[in-house]
Length: 407
Image (cartoon, rainbow, N blue to C red; front, side):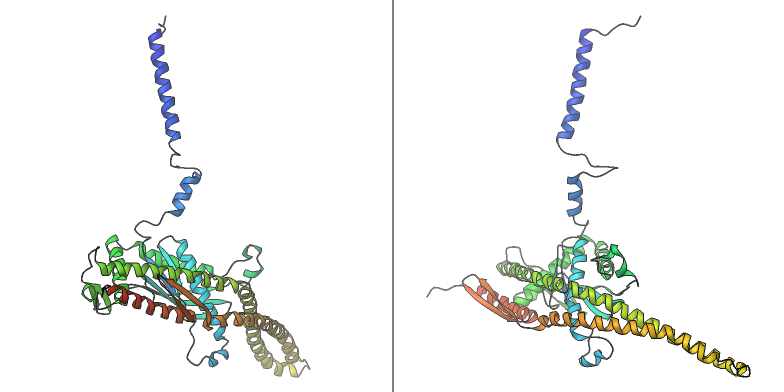
């Protein structure tokens, strides 16, 4: 007969069971365990979503307003179906689109839209519009870091499906978005291939180049141009008063550029609806023109065949040529009519975009900057106000570099 455990053994078993239970409770009380399979906890998902990519997330990026791809004589482009004011509006819109896609990669510390490539940054992404007609968008994107080293120079294109705007699931969607997502991912992929030492060097170069923009003489010993690339030859001590003043100016510069992001966001948002309508009507016009052209070509081919056969049929009194021409021309006429209506609709929305685009180069509301004991008013377009701001930063830096002397 099996011996039953005594009271002491039973007590020990209870103590061990309690300890195991307590340990299990303690494990759950300290926080959720990482999921291996199945849905992640909300805190784990949020932490992963906000975490930057490994090895990145420290570079400051600027996206200058795109080059609209217009020649000096803009009037000649209208005959080619390129409308200067629309292109200028697209130049701002596409820069903002690229900014949003770059931010979604979580590969960079900040991404900002600026009027030109003279702003301080670690990485510059310059875009140029090569073609845009509602049916196809083609851009060239060039990425260069603060050392002037080129990361990439690639062409990205996107063709809009003929039934894109008819699909309910595309409601409110921009058919060009995948292009900017692809471009942003290409830049992020280049970043992933850089080692931490190179990333740190790019940041130091960006810092020295900004400092040299304030006072080239004060920071001349820390770097210079060699074979069209900026090379560091040293770096100031962290307690260097000149470096501290330059960093204080950089903070002011970031705040100024951040304030302008609201304007770029508002401009892009204001043209959303009109631009989408223009895209849809322009796509219809392009497709209708294409159909009319194809119908005309088909008619010409059929006509040539019928003319060849007409002589043989003439002795029998058959009017094949006239019948073929009528049948062949019906499709071309219908397509041409559709193209004309689409052009009329596209013109209406293009004019609305023209009015919005005029604000790009127009004089904006004065920007009053409060800096310590004085106020400064910046006026003109965005590009002009940025130039005035950079001059103001140099002026302030020079004033702060001169010590106060009691007379």
